[in-house]
Image 1: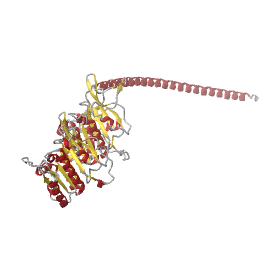
Image 2: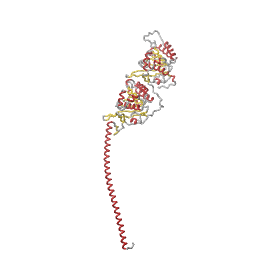
Image 3: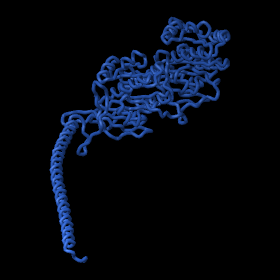
Image 4: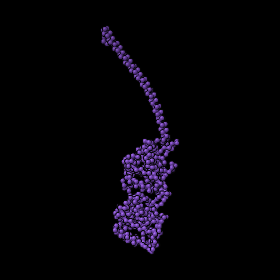
Length: 570
């Protein structure tokens, strides 16, 4: 169940704790009492003090902190690492009351909280305090003789808080079994008395620390009922908030950004979508990290601030290794555009890594994030939560408009599943690129295929991925006899085809020369015949002229003879 937005901001007092105000729909119930319980080291004191500090800093609400277990000096000293500047707040906004019982006290007769409440009453009026916290109340209640006395004093405290409309926090220890039961059984009724109850759990799974928070009740308000992971970071407690719904009306980016490999951009119809989540899967050595590095280099080349998280290698090793294939990240690191962080998965749970990634990305103002490999989050006790971590990472980057590229290591080349990790990020990723080995005739070559790319037409071909000191590129698909060929097999086939083509060209040239010679011979013969024909025609014409001349001359002779003889006209 997800929290609804509060209709009135005055109904809740925000804690300023990232994620917690989100899952409670605004913070703690204002003017009411909240119970925070948990085992040793679960973060009860830190969460309580952080809520008071943020109330004083952000909302100008003075607060009082009553310590029953630790000294106030110890609490202030321990909290100094969070950068809250408690000394400045203690002047007017935050008051610490050290109410620890002495370890050598000898109790004689009964006692109650009346005297302490009278002192607090005066301090509340003096400061104008609106928030108050009782840390480790179970310590003082344990000194009471029986359950009835403890219940009486808790009710007295509750009524005092309600009368003054204070936003109150009470903490006490749960049993070591971690079953949300008070360490002192007679205090279990407190969950029913308060308006809001929060349980903190801290356990170790396969050697990895896991912290979870759950709101078990919140009167008059909806809230997220599931467990929410949290960590204690450099600025205090950070809670993994519930995913935000109702974003379907948000504009969807249509801009394309380069993958860093031009031929891959062509296969994708122009590159990745801005703000999309990209998954690159493959076995060890298939160049997943290389494609992630190529994207980071291209993003920095566009002037976009980029965060690259490496779970496998030291930052200097990443720069060196990618430099061997023409990917230069060193210049971008020195310019400040690229932040490269090495984060071994053994240093914490997947939830911790997720919140650290979010913090780093926000501090760096990153527009692009590369996580290599995201499957490392499923190691070392994180198997059950890894899938949720990956989904929240994708959801968060989408909300922030960050372009995300994740690599995921597969189990083994013989795995039946294409993506063999427990994360199953492929179901939520927008683009899924798969890298594999193609082994033939004793040679192994890298192949790349696009399994899916939402919102764009993309190539369905398997291309050979080629790495060299000049960079990363993809070869054109090459098939022969119904088989995709790569590497030496492709080179040999192309060479054989080239030789055959050259031989064919030679034969063609030889045949062309022979035909040319025959054509010349025929042309010569044709010219000779033409000349013979012209000669015969001239001879005939001369013969005809000679015959005509003789005939004419013969006629003239006959006429002359006749004239000489005086012959009559015929």
